Image 1 (cartoon, rainbow, N blue to C red):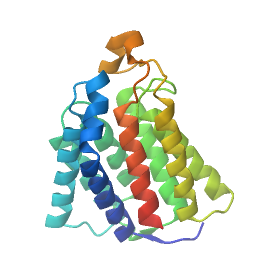
Image 2: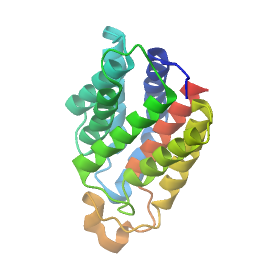
Image 3: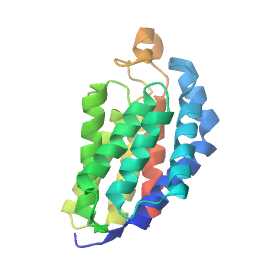
Image 4: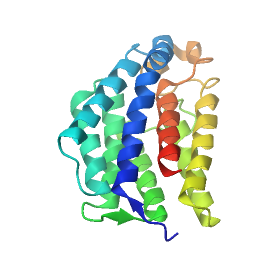
Length: 212
């Protein structure tokens, strides 16, 4: 794809994600209360507010630098598993895009998302069916890659990714948790949606909105 994606699109994505996290803070907390520490919503909201504040203070000129800054802010301000995982995701995306490119292509965006997914796997050791954020993010990345292979626009590809993330989120409900605190519940984890997967669905919602 020859589309040029500017830093402003990524900034809109981050700010949109922060808004969606804030709006869904209580819902995310309720999901986490069932199978975790009941702090996912508050942790993510605190982290994304800090990320937006960091951008307000000093906006990096390139997408790669912007995403790296967001990731570093999340790692430094969010406790539990969500800070390191989402922080690593953004930092790996930023590293993939590089610190100097003022515009990137749709293919670069897909490659960055793939790198972010790889960071989550490296950090959390998650695999398909573990009932984690991976189960929403991996289908989203695959959907975007498939759409771009079919010569779709980035906006169309991210809508496909958004839908895939939502389906992946919903698919975590009947799963038995095999990672994190939820895994300690054994069979009692079945029937509850994974809060990390729910946050990933919001992430892709924001991405699709920013590119439309």
